[in-house]
Length: 112
Image (cartoon, rainbow, N blue to C red):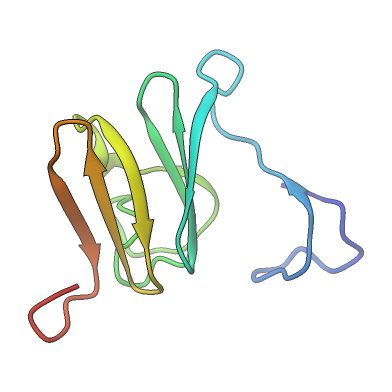
């Protein structure tokens, strides 16, 4: 990541304008963006989703609970045609083009 801020680039960084390098963006450009309270998501032209941010509950859908400082392939969304992603601090919700609703993250009180 290239930071245009005078602040150190250790995580988390606040009040910064930064260009994010998405894997394969030259051949598979970003066509949509989504953000939750603790994470960011991009969807590429091929439908692949990348995510980064806080991931303590698996809300980034990368297949782990490790937080990501750079765009990381959201492998749990492979095979779904993602239309929209939204979320809160500990959970994410996905709407597919076919109308399926998928959720990931913290399960509390019988709901995410």
